[in-house]
Image (cartoon, rainbow, N blue to C red; front, side):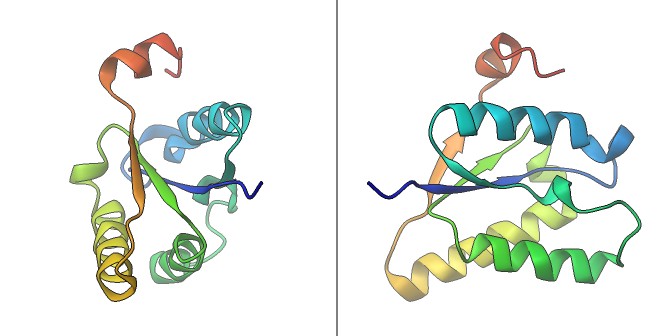
Length: 113
């Protein structure tokens, strides 16, 4: 059976430690649930400029069947650009990318902070 591939989207540049601990904990949780994960936080910090990071994230997104938006994603410039790409892909392919919502309750129970 083919695994769903899930992209993690959320604020990075405006969060302490680039939000890497949260991205990695969600990655581990999704992997435990059976997803194959595309985690932009695996890229080294200060390795490339902002636009180059986005290009890599776009390539990751094009492989995915679902996305998880972390808390603060709606206020993140990068996450909003990623959201636009997902919408464009869905419209073009007449497909739907599943959005896995991590509500505050689940967020608290996962001890991700």
